[in-house]
Length: 342
Image (cartoon, rainbow, N blue to C red; front, side):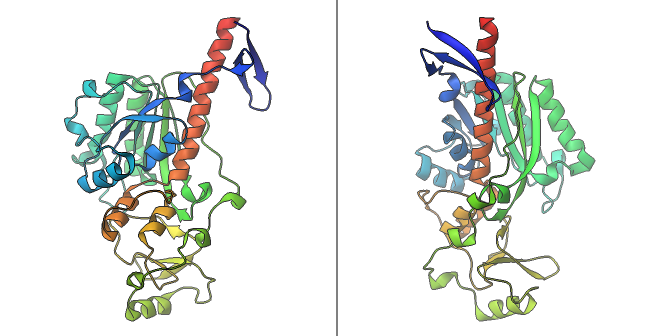
């Protein structure tokens, strides 16, 4: 075998070649499971990095209908009732576990919430049983501050007790190409001592703005009543704010315009965000705000799409994290090959 390993100064890693070609590793075609799958936003991000899903789980039946329409499979149901031994072997565990228990908007009960908060421990039992090489978890930013930081400390300590090297960071979807201010905590872990850095923000020139995601022709049904429109325009903070903009009404009743959307919320009112204080975003625009491709199928009603998108993730953020995770895992594998050659 004509094999050689060189140190790439630009990539700052060892790369091993076989007969002039890069050696293939399992990370060129890895497997993952999609827990608390929702409508598949996390799945899209890791498929883009070369992965394939071997198991999915989702409790909400409406979300399952959307998931099945787009991925051709109906997720398994309640994860609390699934024996980890019955889950196929996989390389990476993915899960945007329910955030209501930790959300600023929610009751902030954390682990005292038996229906949501404790679902983290289902992730823990699956990691303990299956021992995948890595995981990526997503939750609301407030998870870090909940109970003066104790909740996050419990989560991190449990993950580390399983032998994982854990990284975490709050990322904003605005920095990764979608016009939505959506801050979320991402927790990444590796069984091996893999060097990992969260992805850097994309250049401003590569980010989509509102003009890029708004539809040209919009049905009249999306426009609000005159009374709502006039009320919003009367209360807007900057009446000369350039269009297009998206505004939302805060708890004090003020209307604040921005060149991007506030974070989509599953339980928000029908008029939580309005475009130019005239109309609601269409289903396709809501999906675009989260970075879903236009090939993504819309199969349910407006209200259900809005709810599902509010529970989902910004796909470009997941893509960026997945890309960095796989690059880090490949670099680790190549460094092991180099070490074995010495």
